[in-house]
Image (cartoon, rainbow, N blue to C red; front, side, top):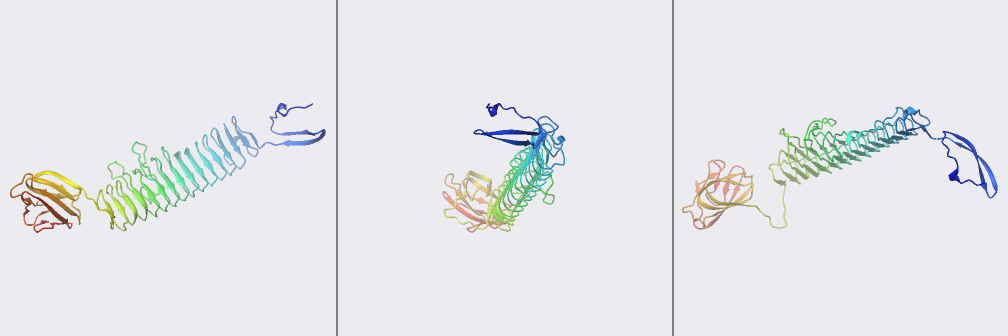
Length: 416
């Protein structure tokens, strides 16, 4: 009689001893068989545990396979496969291999030693002594001594490197990729809507974004928004809040050695500079400098400039002018106006070494005996005044030496 294998009775026991007969073209051979399962039911529903452990190690919907385990795991739908002293502490966690690893809620650890993924969506793959705590959607991959502290936001990541720290309660998309001793941390330490930070470090060594580097493992209050360090060595961004409650925005360091952005800076950028400081400035940029400090807002600072084509300058169109007028020299290098009456200009926001041109149109109104008077203050007319030509357009050029504004013509402006 022939019996299809699919029709054979299903075995459901824990062990089995029996025999089966092999029939090959009329020749039969009898074999003895023995079945020993690798798992046995745990203490909970749909749970399983390896033979060398008691069911208490697998409560609820949990599985522990092989390895050695000193403390029972907890949580539904969790698993530990291999390793030594691994466990889960919440639901949906998993540990594969390694030693003394712990996985929390929806977290995962694969290999490594003493890794701790506790939080929401944390993951650690390889490495040693890595920590991810109270993280939302964070990850550590192949790092040594790296840490993710966490918060209630998402996007915390460390890839490679060692001793990296990605920081505190707030910020999205924080990351450190490669390098050694990099830190992204110490941002606003509360759970209010004012948590800012979209920081990042890519490569380099001992780079830093945050607050006090003497307390690198603390989550002290501070505010930043999307600062970035890319490459370089020992770069620092320390653009803390100036006390007004506003964050400091889009600070960036691109390559460079021992560069720094600090002190309530907004929009500061350092490019290929060393020992350079941008502090308390807005949209200041340092390019190729060494041992320099940014002096002005909305300004690019560099050592020398070589242009392959013609330089361009902004022109300030003053329109019709008569009487007292402020001339803001930070808005451009050429100021044009049409005189309607005798005029007293006050040149403001002059910069040391600045060359300034002002062009006076005295053709439209042809002011008789036209006079441009000096002012008592930052500048005045050395000889009292200058007199534009009648029914003509006159150009004046001047240079500011830090305290005095000189016209190229005799009778130029000078300091009081």
